[in-house]
Each structure stands twice: as structure tokens, then as C-alpha cells.
Length: 119
Length: 221
Image 1 (cartoon, chains in turn purple, cyan):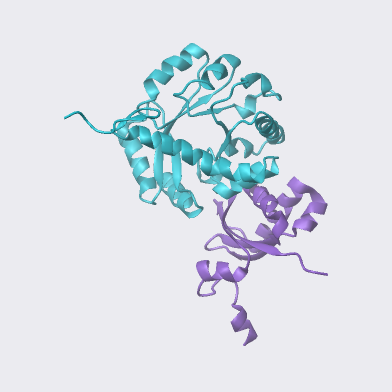
Image 2 (image 1 turned 135 degrees about the vertical axis):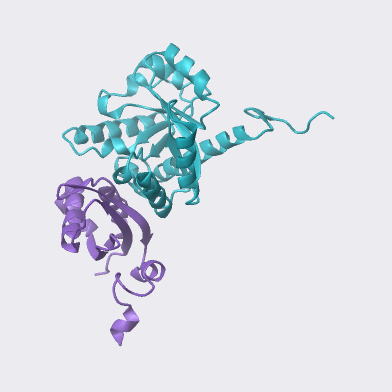
């Protein structure tokens, strides 16, 4: 079976407190489920690929057909664990490499480069 | 001012090119100039905006006389049919918006048949985290379906009052699209439509401008 094309969303999390990647991942899943339901959550398949608590920036991967829905769910999120927060998508890309080149050229937080992984 | 500075940085980061800052009559020139400068330092074009909340049409006409020159964008809240019938027709009005939180479920009675002004949907109205947020979403869906049925131009804005209510332009388009607006219309609601309105208002600032469609070509020597 052919794999569904994916889309990567680079976001900034604005909040008065810092969150761990686990909490952010759970919140993304919760907000997509809240607005679109369990079945659509499986179809959208949002996954937190990277999150840097210092920069408060992260990358979400989702199905390319569901980008608008995932963006909307992130935009309509107003609280994380009782703290006022906001997700703002800065960039959308078809490959994680293009995000890495632009926002993390040193490979500090979006993850290691494919070439490095191979070696 | 620190919050405003952070908002300016964030707005530039998420892809805004032009921002409308809402002031009122009481805002002093110094405060206005310093707020504008903070945004301009981030490379953003700033338009001064005023939101009018008139109770009657006479109230609206009186206010319009005073605000057209000092403000680039004039937005009017339509809380009753009297106000909406004037606001939708008057050339001095750039945008009309409805008080989503207090609006009845059917908006049709507020919207006149001949529409000339774009209707604004504030995303901040949908971001209230209380029991009424679901009904606000339903009202927004009704507004969007009315807009599509009546071929009414729709403009989306963040309506941000702090850092937490700011949203990226593409995120606002995604929300509109999810609420039922066609994808291309949703994108133009945050890009083409507000931009053309701003271009028209920027033309008014030029010294050659006389009226809509009339400009001075050369002075008599």
C-alpha cells in the first residue's frame, strides 16, 4: 500500500510557562480529537516530531490532506494544562529537511541529519 | 509596551506584512506613534484603525464625520438593523462586523440585501475558553454560510489584544476553511481582500488624491 504524503508544520508555542514535549504532543492530539473526532484523528495522524522547550518551537507531522484541519485545531487551542497558550504555525513544508535547512542548520533541535544518521 | 513589542516580533515572524492597530479617540499621539514605530521596526506596514460601536444610525453618521480623516480603517459594529443598513452603504466605512458573542443565531435579519462592505470575522471571538465557545463556533459557521449564500466578501482578522490571541494568517484561513468557507475564499479573506482595501486607503493619503477614481494629474501653472 502506498504511503500517504505527509506535511510538516513548524510552530511556535506562546505560553507563560514551559512544557515538556510529552505534554505538547498530548495536547496536539487532544485538540485534533476535540474538533474532529477519533476517526479523523487517525486519518490526520498528527505526530510531534521535535520540540525545543528553550525556543518553544516544534514540528508536527501530519497527513498532507489534513493540514488545514490540523492547523485549525492548533489555532483554536487556547489552554494547555490550565495555562493560557497559543500555537502559531510559522512554516509548512513537504520535507523535514527543508525546515531543518532554514530553521535549524546546525541540527540542534529538529533532529539529526539523514546523512549523519547513515554514517 | 513590552507586550506590544513582543506582539510586533511575533506578527513579523508568523508572516504578517500589514497590521491594523486599533486606537480610539482618547489615545494620545505619543502612544499611537510609539506603538506604530514598534511594528514598523519589524518591517510591518501599520494602518491605524478605529472600531465604532454606534447605538443608532445618527450616532454612526456623527462619528463617521470625525473619524474618517485621522484613521486609515474604519470598522463598524452592527448591533441592530438601523446601524447595519447605513454601515453597509456608507463609503466612509471600510469594514463591518457583528458582535459574535451577543448575536442571535440567525444573522440574516442584520444583513441588508445590497451588500457593498466586507464583513469581518474576528478570530479572537472564537478563542474564548468558556461554555459559550461552542455556540460562538456555531454562529461563525452561520455567518460564513450566509456570506457564501449572499456572495458577501468576508475578511478575517485575529482581533488580538495580547500575545495569546494572535494567530498566523494561514492559520486563520485554515479555521475559516474548516468552518465551511471555500479554500480559495478563505485564503483571500486573509490576503487579497484586506490588502486591496489597504491599497485603496493608502491612495487616499497621497496628495494627488481628490476622490475615488479622481486624482490630480497636474497643477495649473
